[in-house]
Amino acid sequence: MRDKLAKVAVAVGFVLLASCASSTHQSDEERRAQYAAYAGPPIQQFTWLGHFDSWEPLGQNDLVVFTTPSDAYLLKVWPPCDLRFAFDGRGGETIGVTSTGGTVSARLDSVIEHSPAVGRTVCPISEIRKVDYRRMLADERRQAKAKQGSG
Image 1 (cartoon, one colour):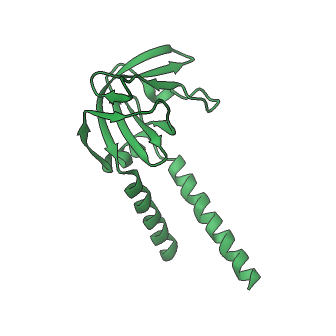
Image 2: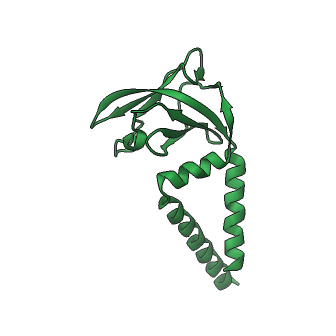
């Protein structure tokens, strides 16, 4: 019985590693398309309490920010900003977002990028879309389970 449990644990570990590896090899465009598929229509604003749970650049003009572990917003900024290099290599936050009274508004607020190569860049937000991140994760789990069952 212990031998079977150990084999199941190893198999689950491989599935988790494979899913992590596949997600890390997605291009910015593939990640952006994935988030966009779960994003609602453009909204004017969202509430922000002054910090991010996490964030991810999705190409030159797109960024997903998580205000909580499950609340995500897809932001588009005006060119010529380039958000692809917003990571500082140390895992530190190199972006900020302006807000007024805890509200981030499209066409009024900006993403502030801090890049060692460029310095500080102000990137006006042109569009905000709320992402149904819980549904996205549920669909990913369902797809991983289906792959596991067919393999």
